[in-house]
Length: 415
Image (tube, rainbow, N blue to C red; front, top):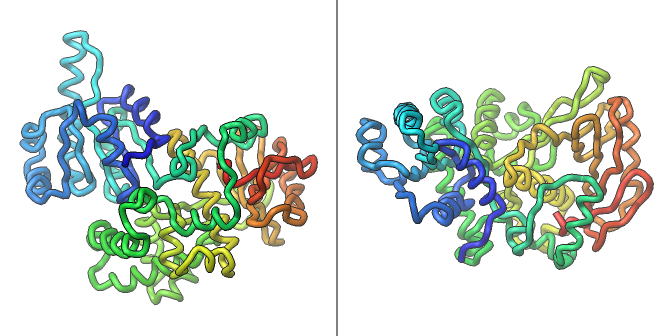
């Protein structure tokens, strides 16, 4: 069963602007399925998971592209990054033909990849100006339940429109069930049983994407590392602390963090800083992009235990932040341009800051309904000399309502 993705419109829009597009995303989030739904009627497909095709692409990329003439979908492009130079040549040759014959530009190549770690340099050097890039994540809450998913803006006028879409209220227990299950398509559509799926997912991810990037002797350490990291979701990232707990040096931890980040497994939320203050905590906060995977790595056996465990606040925050980041990706927006967090050495913290031009929207994330004094730290933002707009407190309430002159309560089920 195919479930409509918000990112479809973005992919089609980008495809009209470039002769090639790259769709990035973690394994099994639906990249290939979505691309096939949009383009399969006109485009042939080849996957570099196939050993023979991969060997040809690596040894003779020109022959590979001649054997698979465009328009072409190439899946798992990171397995033969050397082919990017030949794609550049093909695009440049075809551009001259289009100009000579006064023809409109076409989309020649659709590339999908599950890791930027091996591709970023090649894409930026070989296909600069020739390639549009789109990020994909696992299902968002809206996609799972078949709702429209407009771009998230914390402006109350925009958010009130979400309340008119007829979305069904989800209780705190139901939200934690969503957190526990996560957004992987095979789980959401009932194709796979959750625990069996995630066990296989971890094995496949490490075997196919990680082992060629780390020393073979480090596999057990990497498995331990990713589980320890899951226990730190929604916390500040301190490399030395993780190094001590894994028995691996901090330099290696930084490389492993980079692998997870460029694979789309985690997201690092940066602190908001300007020159007006040196008292800001500089460490990023770490979030897993799929809460189901994170809960599995933490070994929480049920949604009920997750809801009442000591980490329930961290998981709720991870869910909210990942939902917003997924929304940004689906609308081809870079979350690093607008999303930050605030914490100073006096331990005053604000979960999210949404920056737009000269305006700043503070956002707090609370798992309970009507939390006590949720806007108490908003005044610390005055030092930044931006216009402090009415913020949000994202919680498990059932409707949008004013809390005070500083913020509105916003239901998490409307994200």
